[in-house]
Image (cartoon, rainbow, N blue to C red; front, side, top):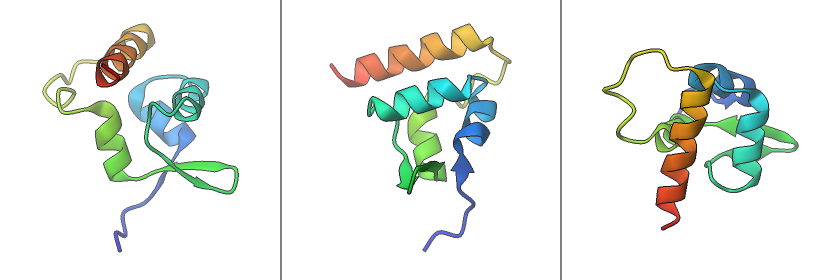
Length: 81
């Protein structure tokens, strides 16, 4: 079993520089992987890596919230094609 800590929705939102409501919306729509523990959303390292995708690692500059949302929406729309 993996002993890495689970991220909360607020932790993930802070890491991605998006609003926590964006995290909830993306999870409820099924676009982002997550685990539910009762009413709580939790994210493993694998969930996080799937959300940010393989192209996110090389780009380390700070993005605005608008840029983050646009990038995430583009990546999820391409996955559904």
